[in-house]
Amino acid sequence: MINQMDFEEFDTEWIDLIMSARKMGLTMDDIRAFLKNPFQTTQKSLNSNENDPHMSP
Image 1: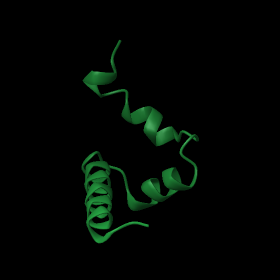
Image 2: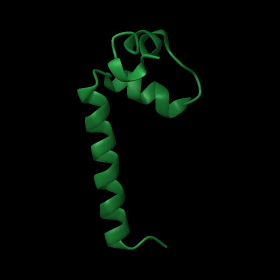
Image 3: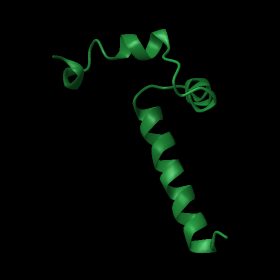
Image 4: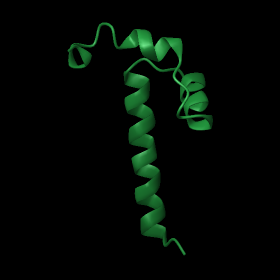
């Protein structure tokens, strides 16, 4: 059983993840689509890596 402290920490982590995704330019629909099917890449996610210096070879 999850106690109250675990539940609050879990919520904080999810909020941080959602806020990070929003800062990266993802919409709520993008986030929902990912949560429904995390292994399906979208054209937007593929294109967003083109300008990311961390994703360059």
